[in-house]
Image (cartoon, rainbow, N blue to C red; front, side):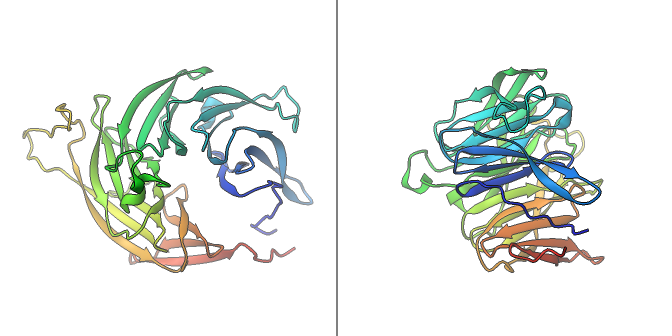
Length: 342
């Protein structure tokens, strides 16, 4: 049995995103045809296939991203679009498949002043939170007031991520992106791709409803298209990967250091409040790959943070893994037109 499966999504325009659910048994695809499609992986003795669960018009413009919540909150999808809206969808198991009614819209987040470019549910177990990143240069964090009632969401936090002013010539078509830190830490963190600033940066929560900018991930010569923070699996350091317009995949190693001796004063955030997580990160570029020889658009870690995948305009998916000496190497290459054995 092949580990590769091809299927026609029958989208009528460019597909912008494909996202697996927590268990890897479901997919959601989104496109410039303004439609979302949900797919179920059906396993049978004779063959396995991705079968359409439902498809529906979800936005009034191109849909840029879709993501699943953690399974303890049910079958929930968020989607974002050029129409400046984020929508929350919930599966209705009482509705038939392919009825265009299987997924009900529960709420709309409409605070963005520009296209919503990226979204991600927080990796927390005790609250259903969703972060959104918009072309207006702001990240907004929302929370479902009652996770069993997805019709009530409140904006909890908002912070600016770019130094370029909204509406400036340099801001136009700026492709911001972000990813939550999935690992246990005293306070929340995320890595943000800064668009036209040709960099990525760590942002940290100060424990008092404020986010402040931290360390830069430098070395990019063009726009960062995607960022991915690796699960640590008990490592003493963090790994972050970036995909860049300059044809490069980069892997950064972040090691925590405390600048204050025991009993010393803690740091303050720009707002003057004490920072609960007062350690700084030493950032080191571990690896840089130009094998795509084209723009790299996506990077993603596996669940253990040991294998990195990247995809780019060369039409290839590349897998990267560190050897026993800690040197990162290409593990495999999968082509978009690769023949699948029967």
